[in-house]
Length: 637
Image 1 (cartoon, rainbow, N blue to C red):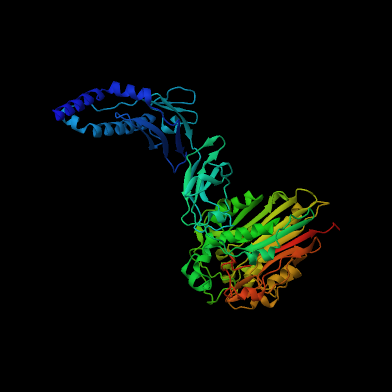
Image 2: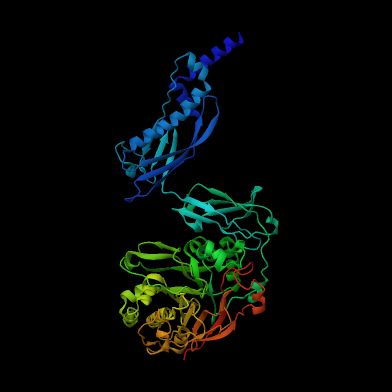
């Protein structure tokens, strides 16, 4: 009897709910939904599809309602009626499947009509229904709307979106944590950020894009929610949780003792300068690097998530007005250094190394095997091919380069006059004598044009407080091979001519415009490269042109008219690894325009020797040491 009663109840339910009109009427009265349809559409020749997403609340016959996310991926050329028909089928199918599942027994006993009809219409920005024959590319527009039953959605084309996001694998107290995330149609500066400990996500501990963990965070994983925005638009949020727990950071004494914290802002008449080779991640992320070049350093301290935290802490501690960096990974610049320093009031510019592709008929010249001066026998793993547009197709863009940063409160950018040396030699007649001499040596030609991506990153800055003070700031990273002195010499000659030209172009009457030329020159103090910079000349009959048989070439007379001197002197070392310790980094300044007020001292040799006789290490993030000095403008003569 009970069984029969149960079957009759199910049958009645099936007959009642099988009515399309009754079911849909019920849905019309009770359904609600999120009111935005987000459509991603790239109108180009390669991307011919559009991707859409919206949330819709389904009310099932049991009375239970569930929010479902619906996605669609359609050709932009197809009629919009086909896209709407597919959406209609997808929503109906969800309702029908649930209905069949709930009423499977009754459906077997009686033929019940389970088809559900969902009314969907598309309207343009004026509220007019779009004809079904209009292609998707024209039908789905900003300001338009999609109506599903009685729920109206506004259409957003290309809304703010987070493509990917991650937190560093190493998170330490006292060191800023910055998420790496990729945005589409969003502005990083407008996004919202919510930091919390993973164990208590409802308690916010930070709301900036960076967060510096405290002792209270030790042992906890961090959670970050990012809400992408652009103007008045907001996309779907993304939440990421750190893989590792917050731990205590390393001893900062080696760095802090150099900086004499707190470091005050400089006066209008002074300028604090830093030059630093960061040791690019691409050069430590190989078995050869870990087992040979940097075998003295535990692998954990080579991890870039660890090293970049120390780099950031050190650089910010100098409170410099201008910073010149070498070996900056392209991806780390855009994902880490640029947003970090923007947050602290700096503008920053990256210049990736680049050079020409080796011609197909070119036969490379064999070099003698050697231990590199700057530990940079790194091969070409860091190279990726890319078109460079106006600079000529087929150039190779390296995965690292140089970067210039300056305080927005101190300077404004007047001009970016950066050049690539290979391109300049190929296209600029001002360097014709250097190119002609280089072409007489096959190996020198190969290194200048096809192997070394050396650039001269050059900017002209103007003081915000005193427009009579301008600065020509340049940085470079010269060719590395110990035997390639003539290559570095020619690169330096091109750089000096270019810098002089920039200074001449932007210097005006009554305006002081001294030159600062910083970087990794891969050259010892007694080298011809340093001689050229400081003594303003190397003759065409100098022995340097023939000091090595492989790089032997016809000499060229090199001269310049800048009066440059090294601001930090000649310390025993700026590059410090077990197999090589030498001064190869410099901050050159015009001595008749600037006076040196102070120089940040380097760690003692005894102290460095205690760090496994080489860096990087637990306390030093690079194989180089940062140079820092404070200069003062001299009165105009």
